[in-house]
Amino acid sequence: MDKLISTGFYKLSEDDQAILSSTLDSISHIDNFCSAGLVNTLERHAGSEKTAISQILKSTEVSIPFAISFNAINNTDHYYFYQKEHEHVPGTMLIEIARQAMYYYTYASYCHQRGKVTISISTLDVVFDGYTESSYPLQVIATQANGNYESAPKHLDLIAEFFQRGKRVGQIRLKGGVMREAVFKKLRRFEPPAQCIFQPFPHLAHRVLLDSGSGQIVTGVLESISLSSLTIKAPGSTDAITRILILLPDEPCLVLPVTVQRIEEEMIVLETGEFSTEAEAALKSYIKRYCKYMHGPSH
Image (cartoon, rainbow, N blue to C red; front, side, top):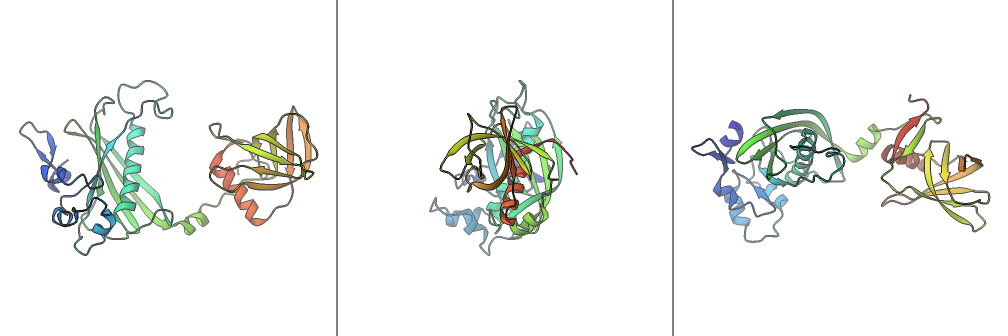
């Protein structure tokens, strides 16, 4: 709290309540953006609501970090965070809110472009000053932990602080790094054993197309998958299948050749043939992103 007040974001009232500075509140309409150190710069750019924050931040006038203020939307219908009724906001939800706020801060305040770089978390330091109520508005302020602004830092040290009813209720500090997406993909190699069986996540529609090569196309549902075989639930009988097409969300379909086909407990079991390096990489990516471990060797 002392750090936040000393930077000018808040001021203390007579009853020890933290109140957002009126100077900041008057400019916060610009993309929900507020800063104690950029008031003069913002006033010169405030004539157009369409002025991008990044243009201001890349100005030579900027030499100190800024802060972004968010109003958190608490969705009590969210299954992951609210599998049971709570009389307060779960701490895991606050951690996720802070992560999203600090990731947004990174892409909004620095020259890093989303999609070209990725953020990896090294440590999270979490402090809860009190319980966060589900029934009151919650404000989140994200900023740097130190006072030296860099346009493209390789190492991140960020803070997200939570305020409710004029008091701070928590602070989360993130330390991590920024790396190019191409480097990240090389580091995140996924090499499961061929005999390891995975199950698609149940909340996604894992539709597949079974192609016999004779013009017959049958739609099925993927039940399990490995690097060497697939189990499909499909209606009725099918001709000899030569290839399978896995329909992916917002991506080109994954096409795999089939060499062996058999029926086991009303399921179609398919063994894949040899496929290209690109297809193998796409299959591993599919398993890593959309499936969970069932059984088989884990290492």
